[in-house]
Image (spheres, rainbow, N blue to C red):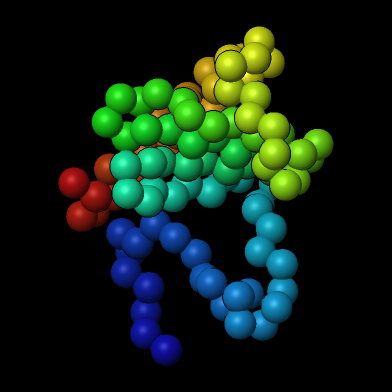
Length: 103
């Protein structure tokens, strides 16, 4: 019932309680941080980075490996995908910093 602060970067988690699928907006991405890891998830890929070193420690093709059983971080495909995801992640983080109260 309260207003969302203008600087808040996030979205409703109501789907957790209603059972509706979350889904990502077309072309969108989900970014999260836990401990010393930063994750970006798109419609097709999930990449996990170590915050301290920036090293990619996980990359999964969610369309072909929804159980995240095959880490493709060290493959040729994986290296190309990581370049793209790093760019998207950097742009998203820069956009957050430019918001009021974004540091």
